[in-house]
Image 1 (cartoon, one colour):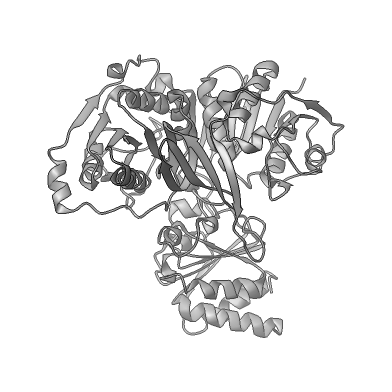
Image 2 (cartoon, one colour):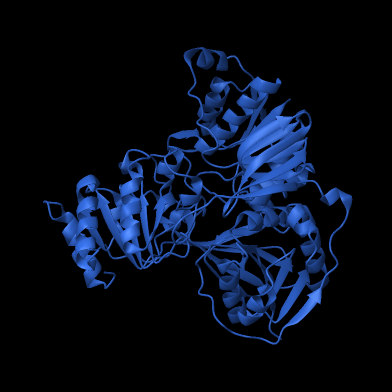
Amino acid sequence: MNVVVCGKVIPASTVTIEIDPNTKRMVRKGVPHELDPAAASAVEEGLRLTEKHGGTVTLITMGTSDATIGIRNALAMGAASAVHILDNAVAGSDTLATAKILAAAIKKQAFDLVLCATESSDSYSGIVAGQIAYFLGVPPVTFAKEITVEGDQISIKRQSETGYDIVAAKLPALVSCSSGINEPRYPQLKGIMAAKKKEIKVYTASDLGLGPDEVGEKGAREKVLSVGRPPKRQAGKAVTDEGEGGKQIADFLAEIKVI
Amino acid sequence: MAEAIWVYAETSDDRVTTTSLEMLAKASEVGKAEAILLGPAPQDAVEMLAKHGASKIYRSTDSIYREYLTLPAAETVAGLIEQHRPAVLLFASSYAGRDLVSNLSARLDCGAITDVGDFQLKDDSVEATIPALGASYQNISTLVRPGTKLLVVRPKSFEPKLNEQPVNVEEVAAASAEGLRKVQMKDRVVVKREGPSLEGAKIVISGGRGLKGEEQFAILKELADVLGGAVGASRAAVDAGWVPYAMQIGQTGKTVKPDVYFAIGISGAVQHLSGMKTSKYIVTINKDPEAPIFQYSDFGIVGDLFKVVPQLIEEIKKRKGL
């Protein structure tokens, strides 16, 4: 079973992400990057499935040259190869343009299953996975917290408002993985060494048959008009506990008439 | 003539979801509110939608919408858009809402705006306000293609309002093509919960990494019990496997807006803030005085939660005579 994982390499979780008011895009230059933990979970899920059912995992990512560190991480975890869509023309893509690009790259691979995170940890729109499924013409099997494959049938436990649903489809399919679906493995030294020899294919949008009007800001259907800051909430009182902290909270609750 | 603003209505737990009613309130304010309701639904669903402002409801009770996810509903909604061309179609930022929008935005090649906190019509288009990056920014976005604008709305962005309209229910033909039966719903499992739901609770007690483990959530449950509240958690606590995802509050979890929100052992990552920032009062307990959560709290204690919380519970019991 060949699995393609779409994942993002994003500013590290230690970075406070900012938006550039001129380009109206997130500032991605000059900050440390890492494989999105949500994408790492999708890679992990792909590895577990291929360890059980055979086949390989290919990571596809779109991003600047800063993405290399995250790609290497996925390869060190055990992905067999990677595709990096590296092209200035794709900067400024909205969800739809991103999905078109990723779908075009996936179509160049032989795949039985596409895995994504339900949403990236930096922009979390939560709709790119479903858009990719549409462009690939495969069933969108979303919000998985557990995945089982039997023959050409895939079954998931799908997150729901009140518990979970059992949802099934036939392969090939796309599955989006909920946060916490697994604990991604840490790359071991052997994996890190092996990763150095693995192939990273680099594509531009035109390599994927996409014209300049289909990608980046020109291809985006969503346009950010302005970037602002919300009014700041006035921080209230904070006191250091000197043995009466619990009582002081109770006093506050009494003041606002909660108790 | 007022522009038609459609709401894709959902039901859960045998009720029309609160977010559906919230969206209807906003839709009524901006234009002529209409709703789509597909699949088996509770008996009073149509009445509830009408009471909250829907003047027209596109309705099919066919069970295909329950038995097969996304594709049948997307087919029907795409057909309705084609036929009636509403100015805007609103979806809740729910599982089903996001699934449908992803399909429709690709199929209609129109894109979509997600995480919408507010919107208005402007010059044949929309201007949507997005509390971006955990509400640390407030951006305004639009959709550039002509035609119906698809927006995914954050829960708790609007207040539901009673606004009864004479309602016209239009039966729509159910989707039936075999190719739409690809994602099959086999079973629904309800995980039992006690006490008020997180979304409905007036008091929410949330724990984070500072709780240090699963067992320690018991003291939060005890605090919730004496206050009549519900227990939530940060993503850190959920990812650590201490509590289920259903308890997660934040960007990738639930959005709550209680009267009092307790952030206990939670540092206040952007991802968490976006799910609780609009609470009326925020009370914080954290041992790190530099934790960003203190910037948002109305009352904070810098200290050891394992000392402060038990004392608080005792004090509430005493004052309530429990």
